[in-house]
Length: 331
Image (cartoon, rainbow, N blue to C red; front, top):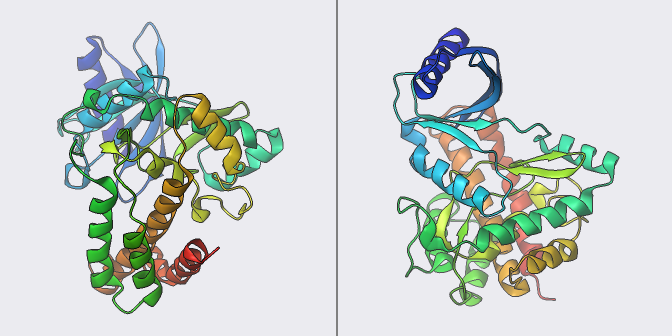
């Protein structure tokens, strides 16, 4: 497979660049259920490009690969740190699936290693600041500039829409879990109004989807879940969920630093931080993650995807229930 992938990438780049290209040093860096990333070097004869290929089977793509590339480049043009897209391939003939090629950005992505690096270099507050700035830059882009193929409607209610989807999912996957029912009721009673300024949202900015170095945040990754006309606080809250802190629970933003540092940077860059909306989206995000864990466990139990990791996901639902109770308890 490595030889086939090497040959396929070399063939594509030779066509795309109009010159013979040799691919070498191909190394897989992730092999998730959804996407596959490999780093490699591409020698054009006059220069060596250091690239990353993100390979996305069409059957599981949330958006077309070209849409993801377009929204990434839009974000990068507006100051969000994103690896530059070098090329996209919507065909399957080269490596068996559509893919996009990006400039390689060095740094750490594994969450616990990220936190160790941050601690060793004393850049926790810097990373939280840079995350705030990056989100504000993204949310400041006019959603009308986003690709038409990006999900989201100008007249939609992002909070109510996602809450309705989760209500259905809880009824199906977790019908007897009273904490989830209580949390859904809390979310319904505290449903926020439409955001004053709908925004392009990434939906998965967190420790684990970023590249960090000794100088702080270097890139925001994994844009396949981006949406138009979303609530900016959805992104802010998602980065603050307890599961993305990896035991650094006193540092709300990704295990890096407290909320105040992040919020101040977000507002300096032009965003409006709304603490109430932020909290509502933290509750919804936590519940959403619990539903995801239940879905993974169900896939193992019904035989559709037998996997010990999927099976073990069900054991974490109790953690989510605790988190939900702590988030919705009276203050």
